[in-house]
Length: 477
Image (tube, rainbow, N blue to C red):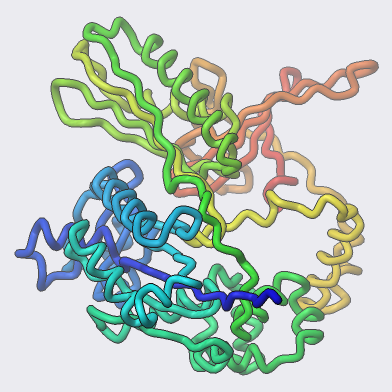
């Protein structure tokens, strides 16, 4: 007779790992709020609890931090150090629990399958203490530990353990009591809960996971479709996500040593292009898309130069990454000294850093009409039936003619918008493509540019060789 082994997942989380490392290096900042900012995009990588309470969140701009928490100390992120510590922690966990039992979910966050290990340690509390002892030589930082029957409940147990300020032991959630443990927690505890779904639940007077879990599954499916059922299951303490021991790395990097006396910028572009090809191959092998690309040039003389940009939409396309890397290199000042050129990709991972990619993973069996029916139902639920009648009387918006000043390579540089919307300077070209239609009678040839203007607005422009520049308003909807 075979017995099914009870599932037990341990979540080990070093909350604010980057901030913790920086406090160890600079103990004189212990009394001040601390924010760690990435160099290449001046965005927050990590914020201490005091700064977070003031509204500072990862991904916020440096200027926003200065407004929300002016007393905070802003430190440049030493991302290499954080990644090295993360790798050392993962190696220690693999030695402790064994291969195939550890998932690295995010920076400083791990899940460990401890089913069957308890007998070797006596109890789950003893197991947690032995694990802390094994990790102590790696870092003096204290992790939060939660143990439960699935990943989501274990993660919430670790968060509660951290909130309680415990530096030892673990928070244990007994089997069968996950729903009871989760019930008083807020809806925001659900990972990547869509803002619209949160707004509607709160309009219904639902503010906790227990309130949400008490709803009938059929009612949730009617209101929020299949995505709502996934969140409903989590609120009820049911998480079917398996442990993924073979997850891709948090970041992917490729580097190349540059010889002394690098002749010109074009040679550097060629090196960056080859690095981008290697990076794209690594992304495709790991089955992930990158959400950001950073370029670093470290030469023997002078400080390292860094630049980066978000990849919208995320991709693993070699040609697109090549264009981005070469465009970022234009921001650097070059010398003839030897050095190293490095490209870093930040892969997109499920449930990681608030990023998800449902639009990149459509159901292959779904028909286009199914998506249309879901969209119509969602619009009617929010705005009422008349909205569809009004929309049916409208045609597609026509392109608007523009006055554009072009760069030497033909890309838009300065755009004058119609209807007194002013002049916008193009900060970067995100995408470029050509379209050719009706070639058999009256050929239409257009060059399209997806650009980001200063201030963050995205515009889709196209240039017609016969008619000039236009704003494609279909992409503005």
